[in-house]
Length: 296
Image (cartoon, rainbow, N blue to C red):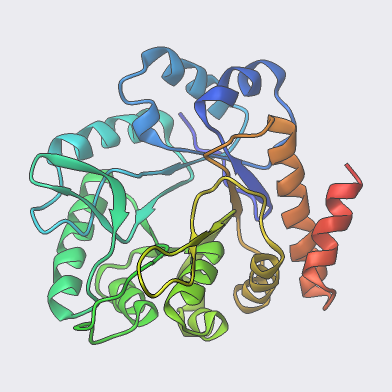
């Protein structure tokens, strides 16, 4: 199957509850992202997805590959992923800078890494393996963080930059994750964006987060990357800055929990397009998003 290139407009995450509607109704969407783990053991959903991919550009975003695992990549899972990628021929394939497996045990979370030379060498070797098996570049996404390792010897942006230099991978810059991590760990999100190699960033993500009160004696508030809300105003502001830094990039609206109607996701994508256009013109991004939603 021939791949349809991803446009530099905003697309949406296509989740299973919306798959049949997307296949039957064909609403206007710039592009779609899927999680392959939802399709690897679901032949009927895969056939619907293949039909959808003939009309829309598709990106594959893995959530179970675990390129940061100390016990190595699950080669059986990688081969299953390769088989789906070969059938689908997506425009982009991406995944997280994180680990979620230990041996044969799978954890339902994306866990953090120390940013040091040992971890960098491990991730680079496993990323080379992934790219060799898939036969294409892999986009690495910055995680949302709630804790950091005292022993880290470099920043996350430095780690990602060095990973690009060693493996020729590309980057998926999750703007909302940067904002969440910056608030939780106390760093400057704008400086983080400035530190990324702009020519390596091929995709952007935006998603909702949820504030929660921390447990324990310290108290305080933590932002959780729930993907259960609309994009918040400060994330729109940071997105506008990212667009001015990187230029227009394919942008994905992530919404995985408390999933709204498909039309609401498409509204958020239009809002992202409005923010990007007005950011390049110097307008205020949060107001652009509000106006785009109101005009639906």
